Image (cartoon, rainbow, N blue to C red; front, side, top):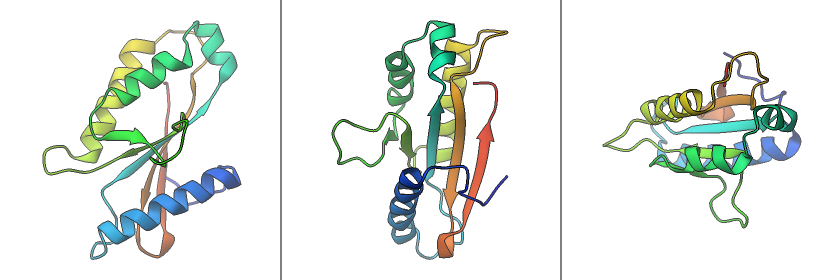
Length: 137
């Protein structure tokens, strides 16, 4: 697990910091905040090799409750960063597990390229981050 945002483009880093500011205000008394960002760096060649339209993948992700494109106020909506919120009824980690399971079941094709790199980002106090990469999607 990394705490370094160095893998991301400057534009993506700006979005991560914008999101972190929002969750810091939401969870100001906690060390790490429960909401999670799901970031996908698409492998367009991998999608073509699998013959999977990006829109189909986005539909699977957006079809999960408590998950929405981030930032929410832009048009068109983001197709690579999603905010997963922790609610009393659904923990963000469970929602992430549901999304990843849906993707693996729907898109799994052995010996084919992945759809891209998938990251989970959690924010903490003082702009600290926990970043993990999800493999085999």
